[in-house]
Image (cartoon, rainbow, N blue to C red; front, side, top):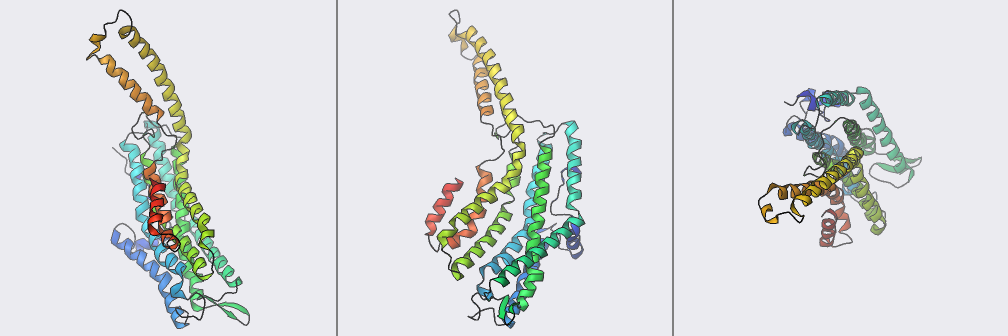
Length: 391
């Protein structure tokens, strides 16, 4: 029987923000409260910016080069990304909890490692629940917000959040709200998930050092750990949020700053590659273990096959052998079974990753970039290229 507490590493729970959602009834125990929380955060980040921009006459028109309602980044970050980062509180942990339970369901843990596994879960829970860490994340979010606003003020270009004055650039009402609310919320949600991703990666690294019952001939070609890649694919929603934010910033540069789209291809491709590698990197912790398992299995099957094939040849291939009696004999079946076992061990991957893991991550990274790419390339050519990459 699976110990209930041993598999409940709930990355969405813990810390002051979780306690706040619990008190306000917006915790993600059910889809409806989570949806309300996502919409509430998006409204807090975006609606005041719209109202203040309308009051200052900066929402539309030509008073500034980039009015609020034509700023792609404002939509992507404060509506799209904020909603996705909130919905990730269900999308990601559900897959990871399923992965953790599989260690028990598949009986991969020995009696000794079960207790250590439970201790690792408890340690990870305590780290997630750290108030100090969340306060540091809030501080980093405000530091990042101030840094972003400062760079925008220094470029001297008037926007919906900053106007040129006698003493240089000054923030508008929307700019102040962006500085103290919108950008910090957006960045805190991202940083919070980065922190939880680090905890999960550390947790996997610790599990890889436990005593596990891995089987070299497992049909998943990952020693029985193929289910871990399914858990990692859950991070696709975070890749989608990041790609949405990046694509909107690049769109602003192309449309309003005249940056050639061709010069950004390397940035877009680089993001897709780096994002995919970052998500899959935690699975590298199992590479030494699986590589050793493969070596040992190939040696074992090689030795067994040599002994078996020699005995088989002596019995059935020699001059005195009666080959016709081989029909229906179990020896032929054992020979085929050994070949199958050796081939399965040979196909064992040192990293539990397959195409079904990579595909959703690549699609999530590429999807928000398609509207930008269609300004230069036909949509059908883009989709064909994407299919070739993931297939």
